[in-house]
Amino acid sequence: MATRRTQALSRDRIVAAAIELLDAAGEGGLTFRALSERLATGPGAIYWHVANKEELLAAATDGVVASAVGAGIREVALGLFTATEEHPWLATQLALQLSRRPWGSVAPRIFEAIGREVEALGVPAGSRFTATSALVHYILGAAGQNAVNTRAPVAVGDREEFLDGVATAWEALDPAEYPFTRAVAAEVRGHDDREQFLGGIELVLAGITAVHGLAPRHPGTGLESGRGRNPGPRRGAGG
Amino acid sequence: MATRRTQALSRDRIVAAAIELLDAAGEGGLTFRALSERLATGPGAIYWHVANKEELLAAATDGVVASAVGAGIREVALGLFTATEEHPWLATQLALQLSRRPWGSVAPRIFEAIGREVEALGVPAGSRFTATSALVHYILGAAGQNAVNTRAPVAVGDREEFLDGVATAWEALDPAEYPFTRAVAAEVRGHDDREQFLGGIELVLAGITAVHGLAPRHPGTGLESGRGRNPGPRRGAGG
DNA sequence: ACCTGAACACCGTTCAAGT
DNA sequence: ACCTGAACACCGTTCAAGT
Image 1 (spheres, rainbow over the protein chains, first blue to last red):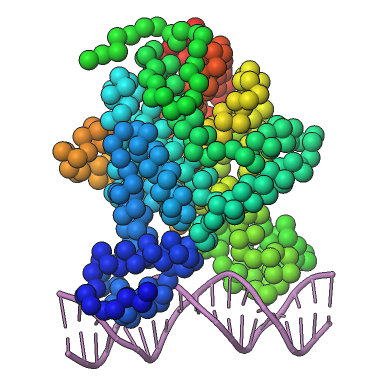
Image 2 (tube, helix red, strand yellow):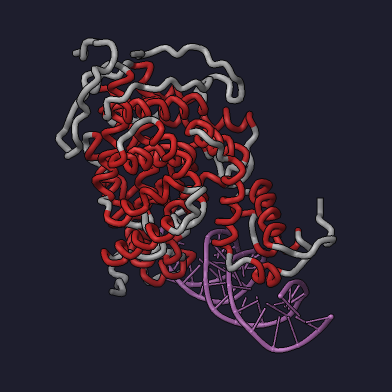
């Protein structure tokens, strides 16, 4: 596994190695010493290609996001969701990069993909920013929750154990103070993260279409369709 | 304000000092050495009351959240939002605590307040977990975005400058690849974070009521002034 | 231009020793 | 029980010196 120094050092090779280290050992596993050992060089050499650790983490995050994000809104969302499963450290970094470096390439990439879909949905121009932001915020918040443990990669069994631990802790809460949380605690145990995540997306989309009197689009993602009330004033779906 | 050692060390005093350090100098400002200096003791003494830095950050986060969270859904959301303005480090910590320590007291506190409101809204029992999670995820994602810079406290002028920088960066993006992001870039500049945040909450709530065929509830919280009572009538879709 | 690796100024955490 | 503070095993980052 020790890489031979057949190639010269490059930013791309450094970022790739950083992603490998993060995947293998979590955020704590990425150090300049471990990185330089893996690249068969000294810690100082990395600084020729990368300004500092913050930039390195930004580049690693962007690298994963770039290859994970698809075209439509559900592809973007699911892509990010799946990516946080494969790279548990990504969730924290997503939140960090988006809030600390919105001028970077991660934020526009996500924003653009979601925004186009919002536009295609027929949301009027003046409301697109708010609607897109709401979706992006939901996706980021949910992706963040999806990261079970950013210290180390998690096996499937660990995940079940983790959820069981959460459910048990919630069930042990004070009944007087936490009636609701106790009531839903059992649902934590077996719930499907992906399904719940997609359900949330449909909820936000339903809100966007309802508020603007648009015809709800339904992708057939397994969520029961909202029947009943007709949502507000009709307005041409637009061209 | 160097604290004289009039009182004995205690967990509460340590956590309070940690919050002060975080507020004053951001996440980087909280070190056991700086903390022990402020408390007029040695770094080792802190470990008698607190297991490690992770637990200290969890306690600091919980302390702020506990005093920020109100009763209703909009009080909870606005409370968290305002708290992240006053304590910029909180946004990152919220995301971290919720994803890494959902068995802690931060997660149930937020979950409970939102969940009760979802219940009161008339959402059927089987859908409450999903609806509550969607709201919590949105709130956390949005609160995370609200943290402009977790390194140091931000003045009002800095915030405008920051938003202007983001807008400028977005306007400089490739027109072929980022048409949507470029189109909304100008809106970044002057936008009201709080208004946009509350608008997102209404969007998600509208989705929840629409999907379940419930009558949308009127918010009753003024969007323009955070603390003022007596909201004006809202535009948009009505029943 | 690119890389080396020792050195600097820090960290979180521990622990024998004190009161 | 509670506190002290030196010591340990690390960090990210720098920089004179090499190629």
